[in-house]
Image (cartoon, rainbow, N blue to C red; front, side, top):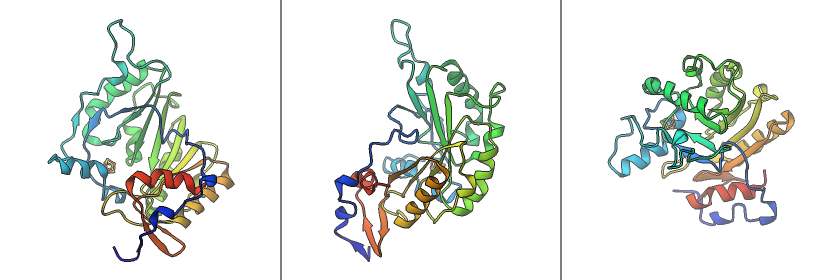
Length: 263
Ligand code: SF4
């Protein structure tokens, strides 16, 4: 690719600037709960979706959405009759689909039931379909379940301007805003207040990744600092532009490079 700096490994090389390992909900140390697999593309950030990319390599059509064998993961029990996953486990749901995908409406009630029965655990899901949230809730959701966190993904300013007002009105106890893949400069300061627990941003991965720019991340960080909202620069993405140079960052370094940026 023209203009790529081959000295990419030196983008952020100052160990002393490294921020501590994130404890954010968006980078959970918990258990991935891919209760269904597959999706359909409908948003700008879906263009180079890693689910489609990985499935294509093994000849699978990601548009065929199915319940996985992990569907009942949170309620699995061992031979002693105890839950396999103990109290306090964080289940990060639906990282190979979208929890609010319309083709999964029939299965979601069972998913809510599992979450309802494991109030001793925490659950997190991210969605690009936050406009469906109110139509997908269980009857007893009320003002939100305290053990369930939801992340609304917004890849561009235009998308943020559409989704964040909806997200703001959703009854959710724990809200995070996800800008991943970050595809444009963002001003989301109008939506940052005490109801947002974290903002997370990252670039796009994969061979066709679109570039993201250093100043997009610093601007978001500054908006978060002003609003008192924690900000996490999660990963650089594959193509990163800083100080007029374009860097291609290998996948294995995208998270560590973001940590070293010290934002
Ligand atoms: S919503 Fe998520 S999983 Fe679905 S196509 Fe878009 S990026 Fe992929």
